[in-house]
Length: 272
Image (tube, rainbow, N blue to C red; front, side, top):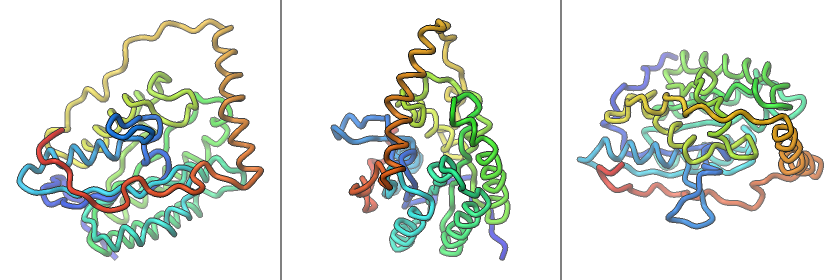
């Protein structure tokens, strides 16, 4: 079945629903309006959509929950989103799977494509995202091959279904460690700000096509060897070891959590 590519202009988008895991939930981008909660690139993208459509309301829901695997995202979030009749969805998942031993990026991609097809058949435009290149992150660089295969599949899915792709793999600015929280998995508020603009540019959102998000940060002062070793040790103790512990216990950081914005609600018009 053929699909018409997503439109370059979002003037008709009135209901945007974001699906996924911690990346889309917005971890490490604290929401000043809601203490203890997070904002994130998807919330910021929704604001760009609303600012570009001052003549009508844009409703937004975010179903993403940290720690979710791709199958959980599909099983728990896709039908909920379909029932809300969105005309735009972002579906970004699979990163948690790729970090697990034995995961198959081709199998993951097949599950992702099935979900994309459901949205496209329902008339919704779809935004996908490649995973970030892990070449500069110790331990995570070991899964770089699987990440690359999964990303290649995402581009093929987009070609077959007319989805739009937010290319994180090819974004050099993403590699700046200052845009990442100390866990090296979640972006800072500046990282999320830039990612939202990158997503808006991919979608062709009017007024969000500036290049400041591409501009590298000023050069960082070099780290001493002692500082680098200390930071690596702290990362392993503070984040890698707890992550392994949760895996061994069969637990997830998202256990018992609910979506932060489960119902589409209108955003203020014309404000970015």
